[in-house]
Image (cartoon, rainbow over all chains, first blue to last red; front, side, top):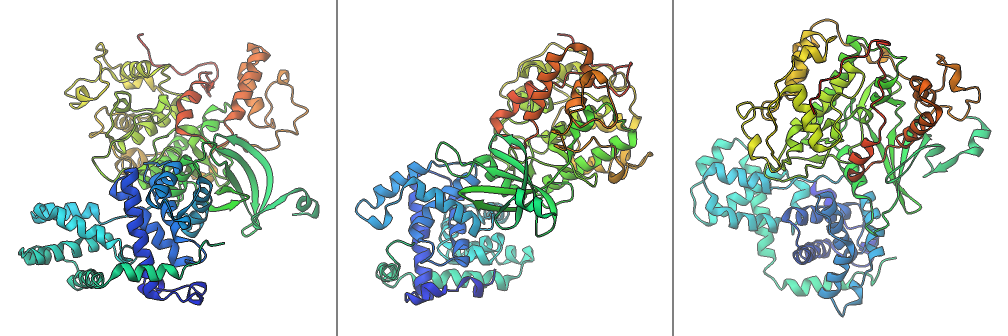
Length: 239
Length: 401
């Protein structure tokens, strides 16, 4: 997908004063939320990545006002777990949501809410459920480059790329390469020869790397407050 | 479509005109409908939401997920999916029949060219799935559907899954038993496309014999039947065998000549068959290699799908058959299925016939789940010999148990 198709704030959301910046912050926060929720119910990283990708795909077609992100996020995790063959019970998700936000009525959902949203999400995704991720190629590349010592570091960077829309824009193997590029530069590993032999467009890899680094920079400035402001613009409970 | 038809049918989701129910599957009703957008006949599966409050049925979700990615002339097409009154509906192209009906219909004569055509389409479907990293895991004749144009299409992806990561462990409880590869019967958790090839080999054998080839009555018996047909594998033939979780040593049985089991088959057919039944899954022929086997280039050429012999249409005019009386014997114009089921048994007494016909109807529906597969297959009355060769039944493999 083109970034121009992704960075579109739906008319209803715009009416509520939600800016593109707010839109991105809310999606980032929901990605983190999915990750935390997933840690509680113990699913593989792959499921988390698929869930976040579903959530990001949904918001290329639907607005935040129309589809409450607080419900979309756990439902995407529910659906992704099923699609990745490691089902999580809806009641377990409901339990942990309550545990994470005991006081907050905006996060109060029942099993039936998740099941109803599941159907809507399937429709919004146009029933396309298979997602490819950078993790597999990451392992293969690092093995090939003899840089397995960078595994943990690059894996972390790949996880962070899900806080942005990169997975909707670039092929997974190029995202993996960009993460390896960042890691090898910051750890001062000489990887130039290896990258040259790959015969991939290094400009694309470097551009993705720049996007990731820009994102990290942007995260430094009182992020919590900006997220709170963005969320305050959402309706209490979507119709 | 006439006015009256319009009054009698119900429009679903503004696009589909609902017709008669085709059957009841394990996850919902299947009915016939007309797609007003294309004027095509379609089959709609209504997915009942699980009673366990777990949303969209897991098996249905698998099918949606994989069929969205698998678009091929030899794979059933998922045309559309939509929610309606809280239920999810899947729209498939309508298939008139399936290979099981072809194999069992004793009015049908399958020439070597016909068998070749059916096998080629089966292997094309598998080659496509495997290229897309999908294992079907439920190969059997009644999942090989036949369209109005004679094209064979692989259907029912409720057990299928992606096999990308080499270290993932899968369940070995897949396939109807008669089509299950020996590595699965020995409990392997890591397997690949070779399991589908074994299943396709069983279908090939069934096309040649006109009855299921290896009809085990339990998992142990299934291995016994396999070994009786191909000889007990020696470790040299299949080095990994002894390390499989449920491996047990079987008494050594030598293989009878394959020719003695398939007296009518050509040498090329036997050679391909033996390669599809290679014990070591690593050495077993792949779908792509099988398609390149000389069996497909040597004469006779595979029959053009449109000219293949087919049984009467599925689910057609069963209610309007008042003139049918089993004692009247076979007629060419006989309605499908029920009479056909009755014919070979005419002398066996009516109770049995009714019983078989009833069982058959359970199978009209497409919906099945993993758990139901094996037990259900046990009840399939497939052991009746529907030989095309009339008075001379094909030889069965000798079983020494």
